[in-house]
Figure 1 (cartoon, rainbow, N blue to C red):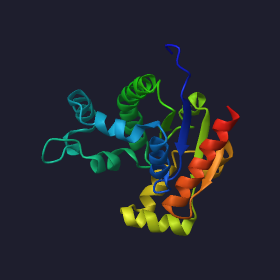
Figure 2 (cartoon, one colour):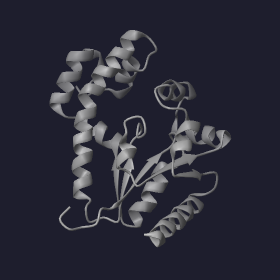
Figure 3 (cartoon, one colour):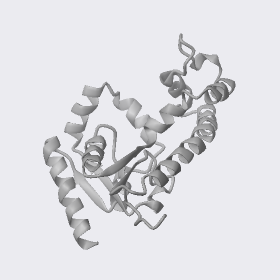
Figure 4 (cartoon, rainbow, N blue to C red):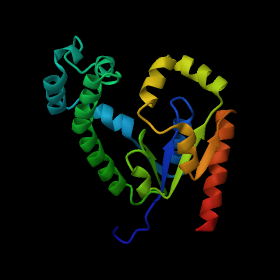
Length: 205
């Protein structure tokens, strides 16, 4: 890579509202580039040719009054348990995932001078993104605290469970992570843990 050392690539995983963004923001303050697959995929939903492809696949019911894609309407069609929903989900992923991966690959290339690359991909282990990571960090949060944070964001537990059925169990993900981050304190405490971890692995290199 043009004579530059490869940035330390950190994959971050964890349930919604578990503190991934706080960890990523701390790493950005320490010189990292945050690559957020959810944001990239959401941006793809505004690309005219993607809109046309998805309307052709799922119908005009996925459009809102302004003619843009409605994410809740799409979710209702692809996250069901029936075979038709599963087929639609695979077709949706066949449109969105290659485009998202292309953008992620380009952003990784552009981050060559950065201290870290923070790879925030929901299906990081399931899609083998961990193969390009130097470390994988997994957020862990108590069920009680998690419920409070989910409620504050307006998440429905049933919706969360429905989406997570497509993923590896969190116990299995934690066992595959290089570091499990307990996040049951303040944001400041979480940021301090990140700084300590960074100092630790940089002292080893």
